[in-house]
Length: 210
Image 1 (tube, rainbow, N blue to C red):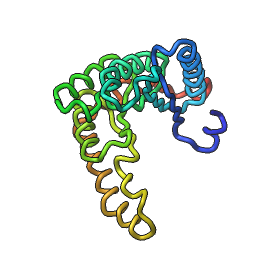
Image 2: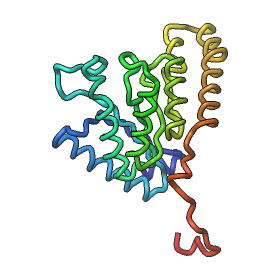
Image 3: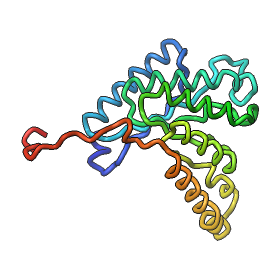
Image 4: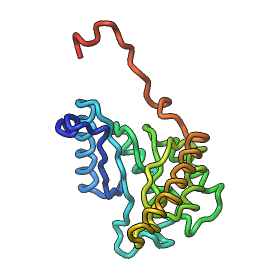
């Protein structure tokens, strides 16, 4: 962490394949996150923590309708446990699987529940969703308490098979406008991170004890 800060890093990202009822493995992850939070606090660098849900049951595969019924509970409990350790920002999967649940009211209620249990700002990851679906998810999530997005594939995944000028043209003509759309949604609806954190009082002799 110290080396990352010296090199100019503005944040640290940790990805966890996480299940809140994973037994000893989950406890080891919680201990690890707690140590990373302490290091980030020590060097005054934010931790972006990305818990990715999975099924510990080999008979229930992620992406199936069976897992989709379990997913909201996994997301909620994971956010509750990990934010309680002091993770500065959670990068969270959308709590509802859009392939099996189309009702936006259920999407909204799930995001409101997530905001209610999460003790830190949370931002939405795309998990490879098509852009139009992710855009809908982001707007609903932001209106329900999400603070923004940290996105990749939803913006540029169609560029993967392209080559040369064709790829560059896609990124310029499609990916960049997509990012602007997501920025506009977030600015209009997102929950400011300042609701979670406030600036400390700074005294004229602050440098004497810093």
